[in-house]
Image (tube, rainbow over all chains, first blue to last red; front, side, top):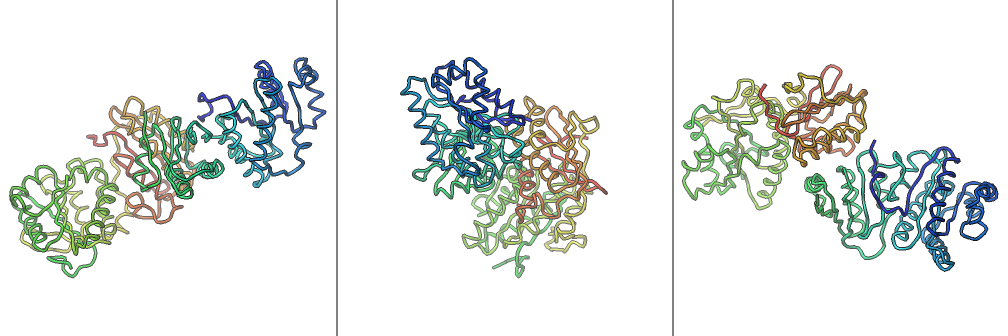
Length: 274
Length: 320
């Protein structure tokens, strides 16, 4: 099985899925230690009680020192949000904007976050809100010195729920999603493969990546799009109609242009560039 | 208002012309065309180069007849239906009371891809019935094999004869029945060997990957992409609407790739599947319609417990 994950993408925003919390914890430690090396302030958002995670971190001298100096922070997702919390996407991004500014003000190069967000995406309502936040914060990270790894527990969520979230990251663990839709220099970047197995996920992702602002032409950079079928192009056309505008799809796929013509999808303009 | 032999008929008036000489062809074609022009009807010729020249020479310049490039119109049956329906709708919108068209299939149709052209000839009895169309399909009895001429008489309700008659074809079979029959699926010589790739219950993504690997450097990139589109739809349909196991096989030749996908199901229930866009969005018929416009040949076959779809990209006109 291939996935868009292997493509070179900005390292800013990655999605991990795990079955073993110890594996996630070890991965998060490596990720955050790299942040300390780069002079960033690091923040670990854990599913465990805060004191349990902190106690384990104190075993690593580098992390113990960083906790002491304020270069590292550990927070428990449950202590912070409680159970079944539905995030407010804009508030959540504002919080990270404040934290990023504070890190810079304190002399750090930026903010690096490893977060186990499982508890925030258990219900469909939670997931919908959090997915919108994932896109908003992705856009924020394109512009500001914050990077993040989002971890999701496969045992608690299942593959389908993780796919909904993984696809909104520029990169994700292999097998979690066949496509990625994320913020770009133009409006959106689309990579990977879109077929019958994920067309409903793509439809939801489009809605969740909804861009405010004037309707009109939405530009999707799809240079890394390797396949798109009629179902997904139809979703894209309907999405353009809901926005009251058009979509320009930049892609190497000439088949996309032929399908658009065949199906009379008047709101999509395919610009083929090989 | 309808004129000529189609006067009083509503919908599509579909005739075959089976001719054995230029004289016989012109004896049918010339009155058909001049009658259309005289009645002020859009009158079109979709012949290949040779017969276009023949008709042009007989009619002279400024005859009022329009000539369509036959070769382009008849590249793929489903695309022909789509472009003809669009053309007919435009003429009706412009006020035409009847449209007259005479056409012929290109020589390449009378080979391994005949089955989908036979299906075309049958399906258009329904597909063009929304329009006041009188059309004739010309077949040269000197070059058309007998089995194919038999299909012609079963798919055309009438035959126009050189002596001016319009004779009902006794063997005419309504498309709903004809299209449910198996057409002979001539084995591609490549299929005599073991397939280059065989997959069982593949995901559409796995099947597409195999197509890209086989097609790279062998076919034009656009053709590989279109085959991937078709394979994705066919595998999806087999997994969704068929019965397992789904078997995917691929053969690669010098100028073509052949993919066969079979399952234990009954295939599509809609007799027009592939030739017309499906009316029900969930039936998988839209995918099959796209498949028919993404490949240079699609053949279907129902066995006792197997439904098989075979797709050909590149040049499907092998000589067995």
